[in-house]
Image 1 (tube, one colour):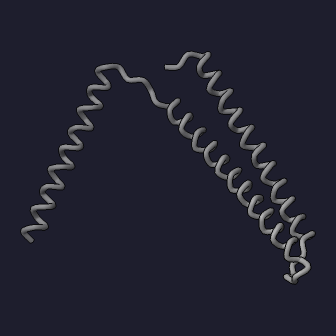
Image 2: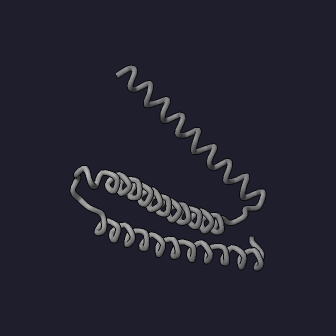
Image 3: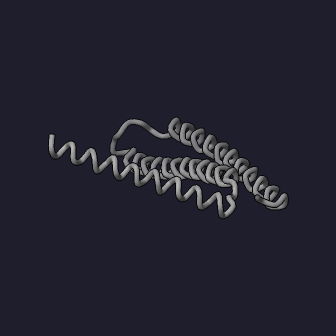
Length: 127
């Protein structure tokens, strides 16, 4: 099992992941607000006078959407990392005997599966 120091360190890391995720969500909210405000300022009609502004608008919106997607990916990665850490913390260490028994049980299950699959193949080819 993990020592108390390791558990405290892992809990601190998980708290930091959660805090970072909250900050990313706040940043995402600000980017969306910025995008909405920028949308209100930009002209929507296309004429020769607004060509440059419209082109710059497209570049800006592309950058904003890329930033938004990047933040969403970072949040998803953070959630996956936290889930993996929590799952790995719950895994109990097995003694050598328990590990050997677990391996034997899995091997028996695989052999049984192979036998059943072979039987199903014979039935399919003859039927």
